[in-house]
Length: 140
Length: 413
Image 1: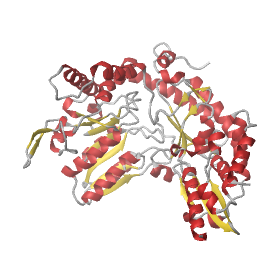
Image 2 (image 1 turned 135 degrees about the vertical axis):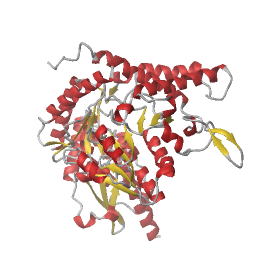
Image 3 (image 1 turned 90 degrees about the vertical axis):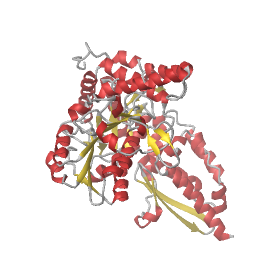
Image 4 (image 1 turned 30 degrees about the horizontal axis):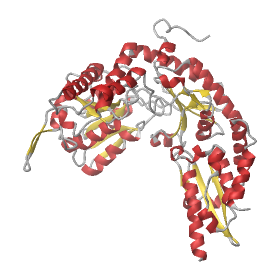
């Protein structure tokens, strides 16, 4: 599936949640079940410091696609990381670099990507794109 | 039912009617605003005055002979008198308009240091300080080769006078400390701090950003040399604040910024400066903010700061009792003397997650390190959730907050 097809599917999944409690319970659950980032990757080079919560992002090439693992000390941040990984991980670097991120707006979670939240997610998305650009340049 | 001891003199429901924003809904829930230590909401009288100034009273001040300029200048200077009376300063010359507390401290850290700080001197602060009362002094010490020393804080969030005395030496030129901790709510025994500083000949600066709205502030009783606060935490406009300084000291300090309004005579060879307080007020100031600050101070004085303090104390005590019923709660900062701030953590949860889930329920609290990282480091925590109270908060809102917190905790654990 393309990045946009996955985004559309996440939007579709979220359309079933009628109130905020269901939506956040799902995000919290995603956070709790996200595959933990191996301790060896929780190093300073991978750390994105937000004012409020920390995010660690590890990127690696697997065959021709770029994959991501990530973690956070806050569970809601981690849940949203889970969504971002679902959308971005496992695609060609060029597709990641060019991707238009719209699903968070559509499911009413755009506030988590506001700089005011200082949760590290804005920088994480920037970093994901930077990896996309860097690995697509390497390839060419 | 909740205690009604104060209701005869203090009608919180009537007060709430004065604050239009308290009627809004957030995420379809009635707003519970518990982020007052960050900034307070504004009463209608302040909002109306801002509109009135821009609608019918606005022009630049201190310059024009025309009607509007004179009107504006009169109103601007009237606020200065109001502030002088509010904090019991001896003269209007001792009241300097700033952008806020941070601006006032930076002014001093630059200008006072230029007059008084030499290589090898010491500046003393406390471990409770907001970054605004740390970094300006770090920078001043770097510029002048001075040493920054820090009074430690006890585990309960209080500071022992013995620790203050231990750190004051003959080299201490300034003791800069907060009246109330923004992160923990601790009220410092400031008269004792000032007396100790005086005994070694050090000047004193009190950061009143977190006390001016809660506790009577009297520069004569405190005996301090300098004091700073912000209008926006006192129900007034943002972007206006006050630096108080003893006239004699302000005379000895060189100007901070150069520009219009702060001069007497300008020649390319030499400029002579305007008299106090204008020497420290370069450029066109926040005219409307200064004028409307009077409405904010009048508002507080009409209710009475002692009654406000008593009410907020009741809200804090009630919230403290109620929150302790939640499993795994840990209150950060339990000094014997506190005001209006309840900083806490809940075992197994991150403050960010609690803040997000409270927000979904219309409840505004602050999460994070509250610009006071050193004190967070002392507790070995990245931050806390902070509920902070103001004149318009009620015990019923505390109940909503506690219920919201229980729901958030249940979802997270």
